[in-house]
Image (cartoon, rainbow, N blue to C red):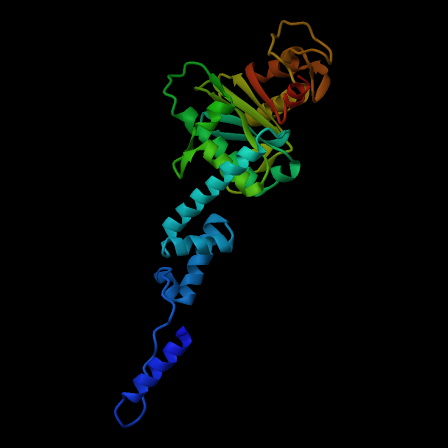
Length: 325
């Protein structure tokens, strides 16, 4: 007997068994018996939950609806379920894309207190490097590196500088607001954007009183959600020793960073070194980028600071050499 016929007979039986008088139809229970949680009981509230989850996670409406159904309308559990599913998909896609060249990307510069970090994250195309989700990945890598550096218990009498390679970066904790390591965030980004990506490298500098870190990022873009993160294609840190924090130090540091980005020195050198030409690799002996009639050393000397070290990152640097090998 069909379900529809059975329901009709049931209705007739109920009506036939009613006593004489006004006819009162009893409402029938819905015939479907699947359960998707209490969140479906109200169309308005379910839509509100769906919109909230969509805004919070950025995943599609279809996936957000599935997450809420799976988790019985629990917003927190649904968010966690979405991240786990996306991570699985990201790892799967990362394995398929592994080996594809990643020559594009961004340099990220982040300064907080006496700590400055420079990171490089690569992708396949410049188009993806301009995507907000990719830029948020660079932000997470910079924050993870900053937290790692700040957790190092060292007594500073002079500046300290360190580097992290791709493997070391991947294992860093993401931070207090997110679970897992940076490699998990990398997998999520690959899953969302569909390109191979790599956490290339990071450098960090910590300075005590009496030192200053000048910085410069070429083609700078400021992160929309973290005001002191700067993104670009080239970045430089210049560590200076100075007896006091004076006015104009920030501008001086920026000019020194510009020089390092433009002239690509290999060492600092000494003020006693002979002036060199365009092929010179010692920073202080190079023609000053903004005034080639003098050397950088001649520009710095009257400023009352001493340049002691620097770091220079160029996005995609080394990829051509590696490909040639």
